[in-house]
Length: 151
Image (cartoon, rainbow, N blue to C red; front, side, top):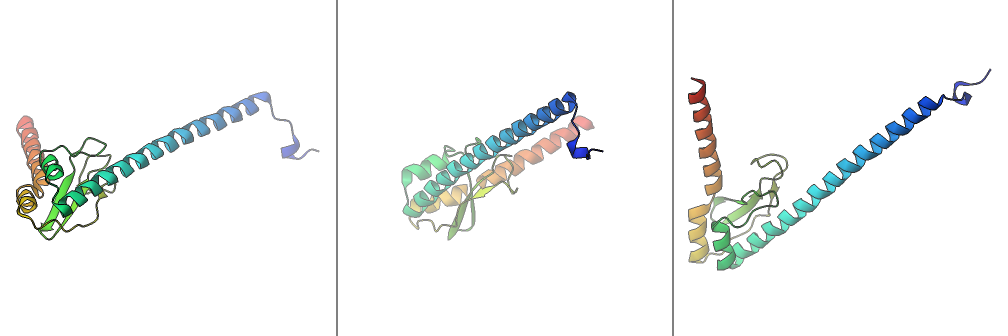
């Protein structure tokens, strides 16, 4: 009597096993490529955050003006947000691939001390968390529209 592993398998089992292996390799390869793309996008976004940190620390008027005008976006097309609890330290935040603030995929810069020059401080005063406030206002307006539509 032969052991089960010594028996010859029908050709259909071998074909089925081959198809399963090909399917698993294809799915794994796709997920691996997707992971690498997101990793590269995160690195590009981190570089943009570092550029902004340096600009605010050195009072680079051109970069600061571009950021205030909304020209600095992450690789997913979201505006890079400035958080400043007080005016002594600031943090730049990318909303990540999901486009939502305060989620696990957000990318944050290191805290940086902004320049104390008047130009940088004026931009900070005018723009700190302005994007978050706009997002909240738009969300509240959307909720109000939905409520009106369902009434």
